[in-house]
Image (cartoon, rainbow over all chains, first blue to last red; front, side):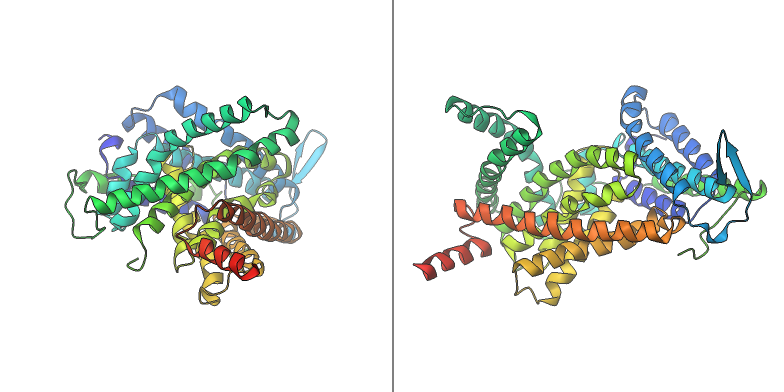
Length: 259
Length: 194
């Protein structure tokens, strides 16, 4: 199996289901095992470059750390048993510590699922599949594709505006407040020209016969095959195994109406 | 979707594209703040992530503008391939629904500063309930969660509502919104004053 060949919509839905399932778990073992499984799937079936993956993944440790320490300090203390964990001269309630590790691992688990998707999915395929499988309106889908193509144009536009300012003696801002003022000078002209281009594009699309009707044909059709269901089954099985292991080791904790 | 003109759809998409880039640019800022302050770090600047709903709805003034623009921005963020996955589309839809609900209660007729701030707060409310579930805020102390909630509501009202309105009005002054509801309103006001 190759993750690149899967249908983007089914892949996305599978990962969203996995996120939902993870959100109900409050123990550290389940997200840990699940994350390790997702890493395995990513590299076994994904043909993903490790360097690129690591570059995207590392920043999430900062968020995970933020979640870890706040949960530790501000944890909900109503259902604590009084057992403590000692770390040097600090002591924490055991339950608080476990929940903190769990929430931090959950953040990393979400990140791993996202990476699995974005590193193995072609952008245009994703949009085509949203249109063909999930019935996104072609009007919107082609509007989005057109808008997406504007990005490099807008970069050129930004350079032009910057040069135009400079040649008239307006220089780059210094410090943070200077940068903010510089940004203010660019935002409105950039948006205004983007809107003008968008209007012209819309007129061009209509004049070439684009009606946005749903009864249209596609040059490239996206299909759903048995592989997509194998992938869904694999992710669900991984979740089942993680939960089972956590239960049998006595760590498992499900969301039980904590408010 | 049928009473939308093609130009409105493409302009909405382009606005979503621009703000998807802005949204992504603010993610590292949010991450850094979360590293320092914990999850509340996001809440301080959360309003920036609702801004396209307010701008698109204020400019186009049709049912669905707030919801669709936020959803499209989320799709673009995923397409740009930064490390935010398909889950973000669900979050975007929920945020968009929050703003859309506020505009719907005015029957898409009223677009003054209070409604726009209310729409920002609507997004804040919806996204908070969602975040409460998905990020496990249930495990945090009530006082901390309350502080997060207040920070997000203020951020939604100020950054999304006020900044969104200011940006749209500045755009209308340039005349590019000639064919859109907001541009028409500006022209009316100008003639009325003269």
